Amino acid sequence: MHCNIPVFIPQLACPHACIYCNQRYISGQITAPSLQEVKTTIDTYLSTLSEDDEVELAFFGGSFTGLSIEEQNNYFSVVKPYINSGRIKSIRLSTRPDYIDEQILDNLKANRVEDIELGAQSLCDEVLLYSQRGHTCGDVERASQLINSYDFNLGLQMMIGLPLDTKERSVATAKKIVSLGAKTTRIYPTLVIDRTVLAKLYREGKYQPLDTEQAIDWTKDVYKVFAEAGVKVLRVGLHPSKDILSGKGFLAGPFHVSFFELVLSSIWKDKLSSLPKDVSEIYVNPSDINYAVGYGSSNKKMLQAINPKIKFLQSSQVPKGDFLLR
Ligand code: SF4
Image 1 (tube, helix red, strand yellow):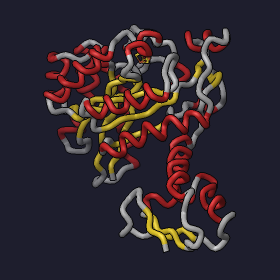
Image 2 (image 1 turned 45 degrees about the vertical axis):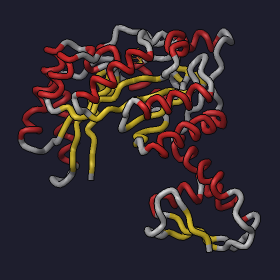
Image 3 (image 1 turned 90 degrees about the horizontal axis):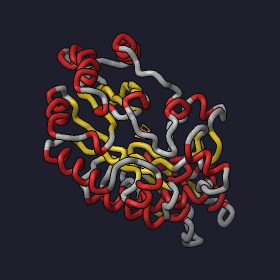
Image 4 (image 1 turned 180 degrees about the vertical axis):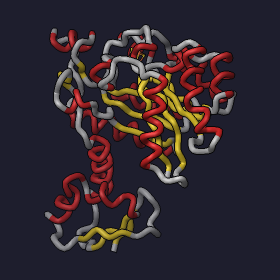
């Protein structure tokens, strides 16, 4: 089994102020973990994992390579013994496109980093500028090319529903991410978090986030671009921090703990909504069964309203994403 040990490096490493970002509420953490805390996190996770698990250490949160090389190496020095013993296989991290250069990549290569995820967020310069990202599409292109030339696994994360974003721009961003050679992606609908510029705009009536239905609709189109191109979607929707779950700091936007399931259910709803009336059995791959049946059995109920005898069955012979009718 593949497992990630997540270590959050919050906004501390980041001098930027993207209009939607408040790491305190998003990650539930404001200070960078000490080296001892990182070691404790690793030991705690490893104690629950089997020796056969393939384990990766993941530095998430702010912008890892925004730390000085010395600070980066301090964190790597904690992971190194676990890598040398084979208990941890590799490191992945997330960072900003403008914090990538040859010196940084040489150092990451020497420390067994294999996966680098960049927060691209949008590949429309107007959207990036309004969101005060502090980088352009050109920066994402340059960083992506450099990362690929070093043979790291490139990930490009994107957001939907930022100010000035449209569904067409989001789909264009996804297509560009594919063309830049990303192997993985994450899709985050924009949420309005308190104590951000976006919160101010929202309170002044100058920004309206997507509602859940719109966010599902946009995400479906973006997801299909990635699915067709074989880009692995690692996550859809923000990982809920305790603060967001309790509503503290969360003002508005399409947050749902099962957002990905809602998106996949809706994709399956589209696939199944015009079946011939005499179908009584639908075979799907076991990995698709929950999404085919639908969130809260919504797709099954939709079909049973037309034919009460219709059944979903699992068959590993049906390719993933496909279905067979009887
Ligand atoms: S670059 Fe990342 S961590 Fe820094 S302010 Fe923007 S979203 Fe937050």
